[in-house]
Length: 119
Image (cartoon, rainbow, N blue to C red; front, side):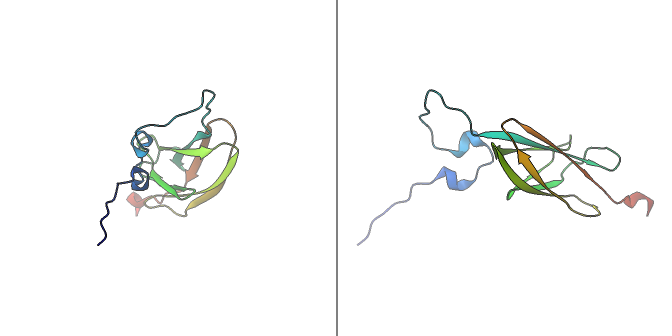
């Protein structure tokens, strides 16, 4: 007879909020430095208007832009990553590569959206 139990692993739940993704505690060294920085994408259309709910795939992680056209990802310092931006009524996906240094990175992406109101 086998008896066993399973302890839920919160890391595997892939929570978006990092404050609840990890176990209840961690011991950090006195000189700890975060190994990641923010990569902030700002998506606008051809008229320089912010694009809400644009889908951004950055290194396999997917987020949607807010009302200001922004989405923030965590990126390792001194790394590079590929991104793809898609939105409703978009002419063509925007793809590119981002090289992240040791500070927060701002990435501006301009996309062309079809004007369906004039059709």
